[in-house]
Length: 358
Picture 1 (tube, rainbow, N blue to C red):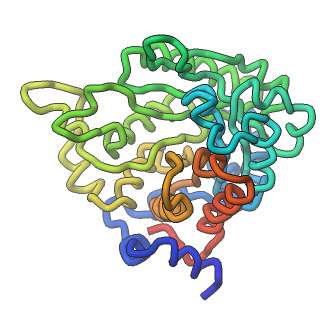
Picture 2: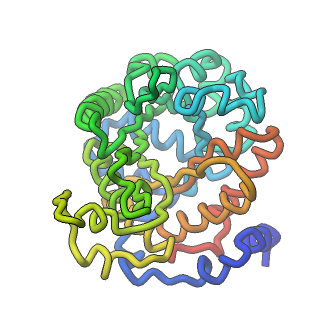
């Protein structure tokens, strides 16, 4: 066995057997459109995307350690707005400087760096030609008192194009009171992005206190997040960012006690999913048009055992048929050399041929 594979197995720990030997018996992998070197030609060449969008997508797929594999490793640093700069950068203050954010993405071998208009704009002339930029165009700011949770536009598509970005990113809080407006705004923005030759990435997040019921939090339920993904690809997101599922049965839980909410089907739970993390993540993948739009899962907050958690998430994503990981806080809330090591460990999962789609 290779040293790389041995390292991955050691980081999986007691999850090794469950994660490495699992065979998905819900939706067969042969029905999926899996990542590969020819992904743009195989999938997007048949779409309505303008030719410059294909070039932008290929630019992302051709960068970093995962170049020309069809898999993606993206560094997202929009937390200075979403979570406040102090909360995000106090653990490692060098990242108050936008240049260090871009340096981490480059030295970490990422396919792209995703950040705010200001972060990327202030260093665009120095770095936009060295690594693909993904400009996050909307944010939830945390300075309004009391805090509210609403994604509002911070940047225009033209600003992203003018700084040399190849893609734009946006968040929609599906299920929130503001989701209808956000869907309209982001759909219009993504249409303009495609017209101007930029690819689109959607952060498909759920947000509603009602999703916490019966003592459980269903914001990361596979069925609910899967539907969020399906709404995301409907407005032509080329890549879907989603949290790794931690449960299932959100629709069922929200339809108890005489409450009527949305629609589901028994076979979603009996045929399309089990309680295994890989099967739950596959449910997310199939909601992305069976993988025609790539699913990248987020790395989650920084804490103990970041390296092991990141590798475990990557293994689940890859074996489910996903396209990669977008990991921020685990990488930038520590010294740069440690962040580079973590990003490389994630990428090693996708480079390792012994880790196959389940």
